[in-house]
Image (cartoon, rainbow, N blue to C red; front, side, top):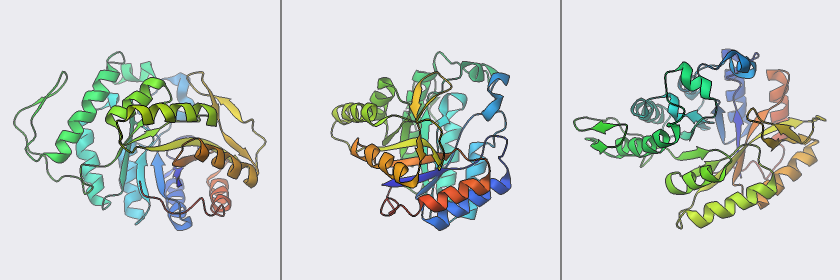
Length: 299
């Protein structure tokens, strides 16, 4: 089972020191991957927790130089806020600099006012995302790319160097909805939902397998975890959806992981609900004892 850790690149406790400590601890403890959360310019209503946030690509480049083995991921990059040609270049560069360790988690985004703040279209974000995925794959595999789409036309260009990973870094499509599952089945190498309970996850995974035309796609869930806490199992997302967290004793966390695995999850990325970086690392140390869950797993 692939087990990853979200870096503290956002929130009041975020800092270069915190990011460094968690990244290096994750690698030393044998976790498979480390992940950044992505926003750029949220409105004041979302100042907590996303007003203070270290930019995704810069942060990953920083931790790439601090680590050697652990994989580097975006959970998730909001493609509609960016030019996908630039994202393709950033991804290829980071894949080169990290010797092929990048996993590109991307999604459509949910905060309309953030799109407005960046002068991007929230209404067209789905079509923009899907074309952007096709464009990035073209750039990663074609040194002299040609592309004709609704938003982008490339007729005379050179794209070098390509990513280290053949075909480019794996793309994991974020989102919990049936539409996100369909998108992952058509365009992704994996599906990356957040906080789904085992029953819903099982149904979505069945849908993914049915629609993926025999392709093998990884299913890695992002889950909030609060080890040793009495926080309730269910919480409400910023969009008003009920979601599940992993909470309670080490045995209860292990049981939650087992249920997710039986529902079809190939892995979990932990977002820690901890009051400090020291507390997060202490939870990481305790969770690392959950062998054989923490057996290194390919992306």
